[in-house]
Length: 273
Image (tube, rainbow, N blue to C red; front, side):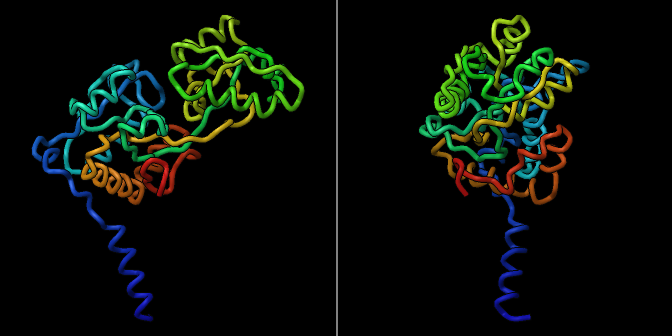
């Protein structure tokens, strides 16, 4: 074997066995505290049978904590308070389906762990009305006002409805995904939008109730939020997550929740390798 090949192999082996260096403060307390809002299945929710916290984020967080050699502690909060809890040190990380948006990167650094996007859906009873995505033009579409989805729906409408000579989609801001579904069932909106990472689970929970329309209209990363100044923890979490990918745990978690198509190949910081 050539010397250059040996060096390359050695480098790969070293990279694959790199250990996450747990920051001293985390190691000392023996746990890492995650902020979480358990209202976004299948990423985080309370199991109806046991009332225990479960979901994709919970399993990924537990796996990362294990790589860091500490326990995962989940602190339930509300979405509006998560960044404040992080920047004031009340929690160590945010792991709660938070989209990595440039507007949040002023205060938070994200280790991105899935890539997904907003998708239209409607009730099964109205499926025939939306065989073509242009049928959404001029319709009332509900989505959570706390997400980037209203902006993305408007952008899709501008790019597709306007050139086709059709009226713009009317975006109806809701209090969240559950509220959008309620308004859809009540006929107050014609369709709704939520992340395509949640739609398979939603359909499985209510068989025959909903159908997706087309494909995701944009793509975005979801990230683990870490205080911007805490570079040591950022490095540790990134390394730990890459280890979770390398040992196959990550792929098994996503497959369990039927989400293999939103996987990333490796951890990224703020959407960049």
